[in-house]
Length: 218
Image (tube, rainbow, N blue to C red; front, side):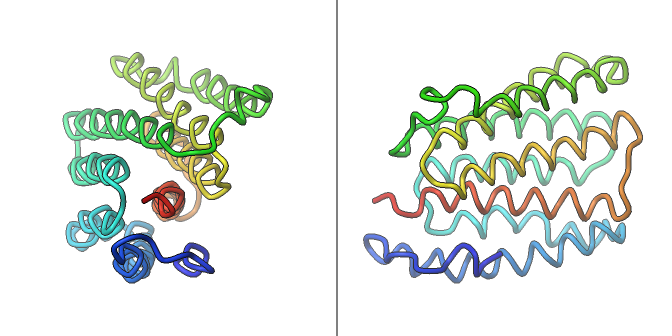
């Protein structure tokens, strides 16, 4: 992951990239460890690894990106708990994180792709509708919170797609995949082999790619 994100990157003002690059490499290594722990149900060890992910990724980033990552980090910690209360706190934290991501992405230069070609967002609309069609009869009292969350999540993906950085677009798409896998497991009992490892791998890659799109900003 780190190699993809730091090839031929320019030095940012005030040496910010000097801080971003080693932190991103450390983040990639920690994300790999956490994914292995998740895939092998090592929940105790993950209380050490998972809370460190977003703070590492936030090092040297612009303020809007740091805000989105901080809220995501709060959601990560909440979801280390079990039960409905932990899930709802995590859902609320990530809802706020996605609103922060949308604001951060819209503030970056070079937007307008989706406005010029709305058909680009069609796969996301289809994915949103299909996922909610599966989840609607299964989410019970969480039905409307899940619909609202999934709508804002799709908004992050579209905002990322709207920019001129393909890394951001890929990050938005991977976030949809990660949260879709999580929701299908929680509410519909759908599980891949090593399911939690896939959730965390796509999630941490999504966050890194979204954050990378802001590296050129002064």
